[in-house]
Image (cartoon, rainbow, N blue to C red; front, side, top):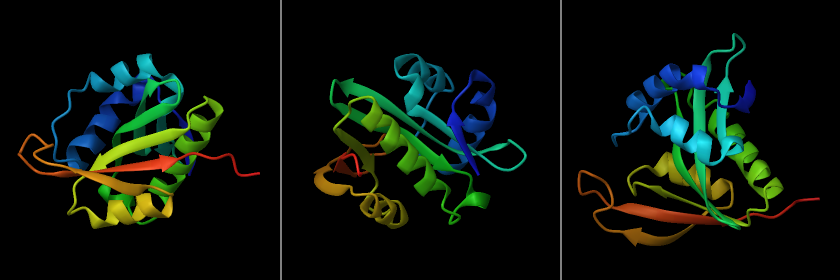
Length: 149
C-alpha cells in the first residue's frame, strides 16, 4: 500500500469512493478546496497498481488545530489496515506542520470508525445534536498529537 499526497487527477476516483462510503453529500469541488487550503493534509491510499482505494482530507483550523473533513476507504478494501495507515500518516503530517490537536465528527452508530479513532488516540468530547443533513447526531472526537521519539 502506498500513501501519497492528493493530486487533481485523483478527484474522479476519490469522489466515487466518497459517494459509495459516506451518507452525507459533498460536492466534487471539495477535494480541490481542501487541497488549496492545506495540500499536505490531503492523503490518498493506493493499491499496488496505483489505483486509489481510500483517502483522508483535513483542514487547518488555526495554528495548532486541524480537523478531519472527509475520510473513506473503498468498501472492497476495508479491514485491511488502510484507514489506520491514512490516519497515522495524517497525524505525522500534522505534527510536522505544528498541529497539536486534531478533531473529527462521526455518527454514533459507526462503531467501527469510532473504534479505529480510539485506537489512534481520539476520545469522545461531545455529542452534536442534529449535526448531519438528515438530522442525525454526531460524536465529536479529539486527539492530542505528540511526537513519539
